[in-house]
Image (cartoon, rainbow, N blue to C red):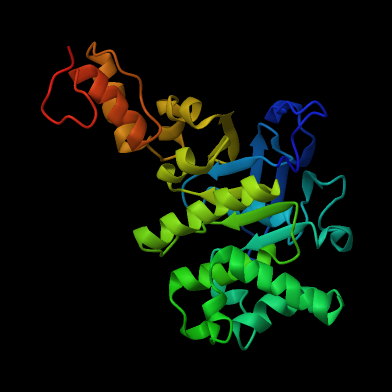
Length: 303
């Protein structure tokens, strides 16, 4: 099923052909403590249904970008548009179109129980009780946390809290999901579960997703498009492979490509017929081909 991004004849629409639903250009913001943040350079854009990662070191301006995008901040200079509106001035037109998960989910989980927390938005929108119940059940099942519905959120694990926050963000079926450092503090298993859930939600619903992170390993597993922020500028936009190939750009942003990508870059420079992979599976296939081994026949050489 193609909810967004299909032609009438069934053909898939490329990201570049899809509608631009969000854009940010040359922001300037001054916080109450007089800290000034500027974000110029390339225009930041999100197309309908697109998975986007904003990549930058801590303090680079990622959170400032997201907070302007969802209407929590208003720029002194620059422009922000979301579905054709300025988020800070016209949030009422956008509130059901946006789902947000903050870096510290404890600040956004306010319900006495998991059920109450997820039901907060649909109740606040004055939906019928039956509709509220249906939406909450759907969000709980989507996140696989129906068994937590009567639990007190304060006592949940970090991974469980993230899932509750995601369920609350998704309960109104938003057209764009915005997440700030969603994997901070999670153990590897929880991190993988949340990542798989995000990709699954994107593919099933056609909603766009924007994730801000300093974790380069997240990019290849999630992003269709990645932006790199360095020194108050959006300095690069491209696919994960294009981004990882820009070593100098990443160094300027105080980042490095994933270790596996760097290893294969070094092997290629030494003359081996390999290309830097975006996943362990891709790396495995190249090594099997390079070594002439037959998958499933350990130790045997292909004839």
